[in-house]
Length: 135
Image 1: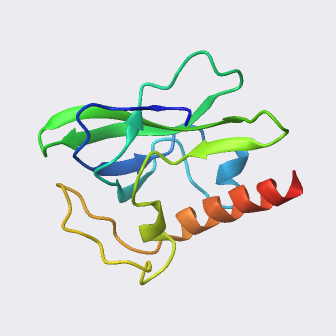
Image 2: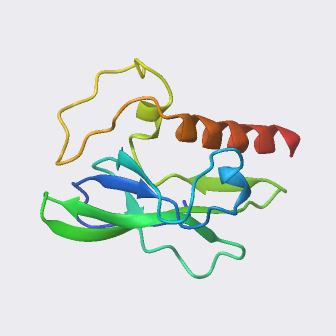
């Protein structure tokens, strides 16, 4: 997936842009360090491998595991084997910011809550899908 699970995983936090000049952020207006509040859900990934050529960290930050223990997470994108790419949002809650309702009932959070539809998440998803169908 371009990132590895943080152990233990059970927390939450904000999704923070670290590479605003990357094409996935086109049209979002996001700046480095700008956060999408509550988007990191209780499952997230960190410790990206260093052996994947072209892997880029596009967002990263700190989640609070158990509401108190800081854990680093990373969102990555890298070239795939067949002129494609792999994107890891590093959150189970990406769909929460795409639409309302998201199509399922959100369980009680683990020290974080998504805020609902977000134009930036919708634009990032749009950029990813447009790039995927051009490949």
